[in-house]
Amino acid sequence: MTDDVRTAAQRMYAAFNANDYAAAAEIFTADFYSHPLGTIGPESVTLAWQRLHEAFPEAQVVVEDMVVEGDTAAVRTSVRGIPGQQSPTMLEIFRVNDGRIAELWGLSSLQRT
Image (tube, rainbow, N blue to C red; front, side):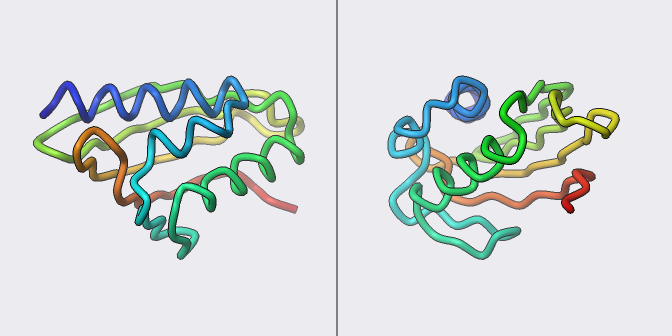
């Protein structure tokens, strides 16, 4: 289970960094729920990724720490490529079901204008 969770996390960040929006359908469950955004489904992830890349085309997420236990991962990341800000930090916790991310909680220091 731990390897599935770690792999799902790595796939998510790699897809974001590559602007591979189509990968969301394979990374997230059909009923994926984002607690911070209050949205459901992989399409909501695609839309959020697109909006962030439209605002910050050079944005890249770098995993700083990852702790995996059972079906859950806690990940601290830095976001590079955000002009005028010192690499914002994100803390995300997500639950994986059958190798796909099913649920996500998160906090970010990204300042939105």
